[in-house]
Image (tube, rainbow, N blue to C red; front, side):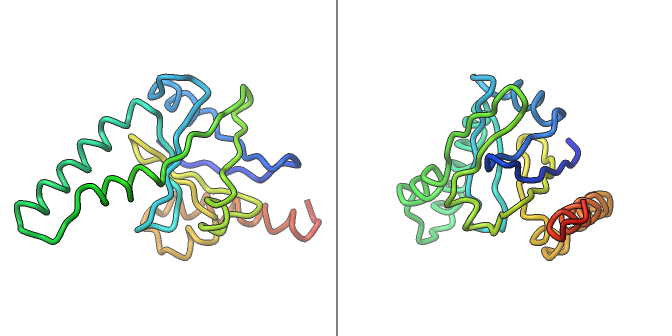
Length: 160
């Protein structure tokens, strides 16, 4: 639930806000561990706990069943590879700090800050500028992202 933001620290880590950490730990088999997924259809990273894997598998099975019922040209094995190969495990230390895989940061344009949006079973991790460019419809998230982006710009310009 909610939104949060984190600037990159001197060791190349971001910090997950505490409200996200408690929910993530409740949805993980291993506290201090999370899964991140490169989203091919969105311009963000999905963050979730390991207990959500069954939910995502059920969604994938449902999508495959619908496609096959319609007679769509659908390869369930390739769809499974396309989905599961985009997931990586990430460790969160006791202070909530984590490092995103380099390919994820590069693919989604994440440099010195992330904006995190709660989505119930998951959260989305965005480059703040990209989040605003995607024309989100949540005015509170937009306002919080703009405020965070102002802070980042001040740091970039050496004013903070």
